[in-house]
Length: 166
Ligand code: FES
Image 1 (spheres, helix red, strand yellow):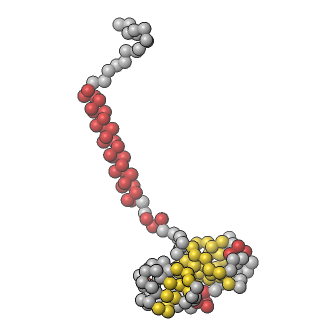
Image 2 (cartoon, rainbow, N blue to C red):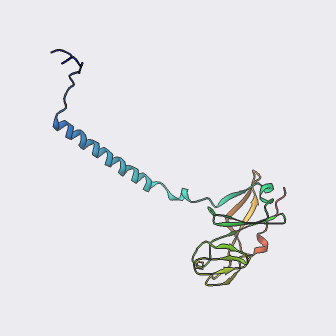
Image 3 (cartoon, helix red, strand yellow):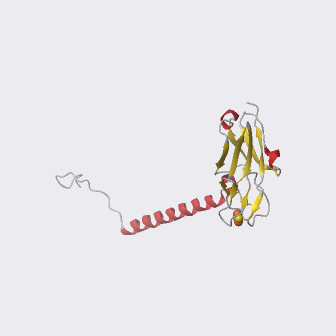
């Protein structure tokens, strides 16, 4: 049999049978579904704990943090960092009623969910909130950054201030 059938030099390719074609499509579908199930199971087995932010986080170098007086909200950590006269403190933004994120207002803090209000030190002054907003310990880490430890709670607002030495 000649290698070329006509002048267009079309190679006589080996034909695939219908049965083999259907089998290949079937195995391809099985492999695709298996891959999707495997990816879903890996996602299920992956621990969610690693996605939660660590309890200790950095708010930056003291010389940078102390230059901006006032209150700054850190959305990822749901905390407010407050700087005043060379001191810094960090307070939760989680409402003590049902856990909504409070907003900073002129008089202190206000919860948008059920209207709880807090004064500038986080003491509950109105609405259904049963207790004040808590503070977290701020300290200087070994690398020199200011660190906030959310596992160390401070209840008294004036004790939450930290004075870093620059
Ligand atoms: S969650 Fe803040 S007042 Fe209800």
